[in-house]
Amino acid sequence: MIVVNTDSVAGQEIKKTLGLVRGNTIKAKHLGNDIGASLKTLVGGEIKGYTDMITQAREEAVERMIAEAEKLEADAVINVRFTTSQVMKGAAEILAYGTAVKLK
Image (cartoon, rainbow, N blue to C red; front, side, top):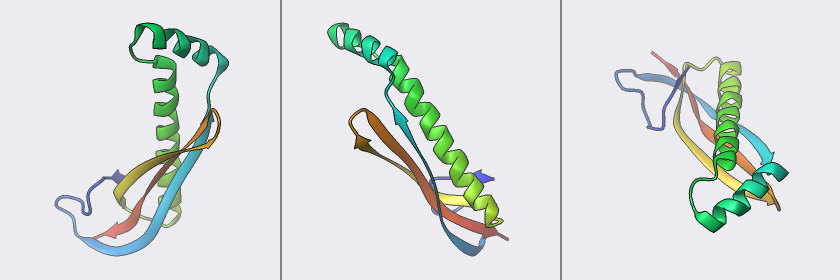
């Protein structure tokens, strides 16, 4: 599956637009990460536990978006975007969305 954040696939022609596809996941903070994060705020630097959590969430959202595109028998998902929102204190949703297309 080709996944791009552009409105076309280089060297390919879009034959048919199949529609919007999306994938999402919601992740909650972990107590262990919170303790490490509290310490990092004192000395500065990357909060690796949170970085890893968001990276994993993004990957899950993309996998779910691709699965939805495959159900439509798409060849590619174009114009892919990400968004995040806090759904409750300590939990965030990651949403990946794009347009499923058939290529010539």
